Length: 67
Image 1 (cartoon, rainbow, N blue to C red):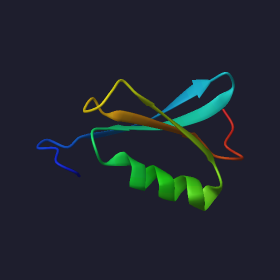
Image 2 (cartoon, rainbow, N blue to C red):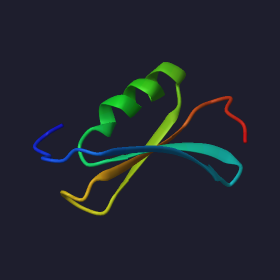
Image 3 (tube, helix red, strand yellow):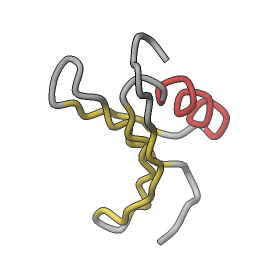
Image 4 (cartoon, rainbow, N blue to C red):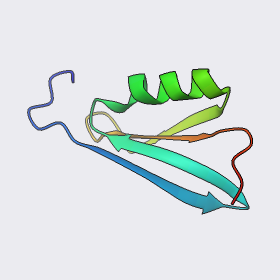
């Protein structure tokens, strides 16, 4: 959890250009969770962040998941 006094995590799914994109948006918890899922299912991962201390959104796809 790092040094976050109020940790939060949001999990969701979106359709982007025909792909199913899962996301985990957090302020200090999501990387370990997403890393394990992507490694298990051999997916693809990328991240988005608005800057230090503002949280991160980890997005990932998994092979064989169809919209």
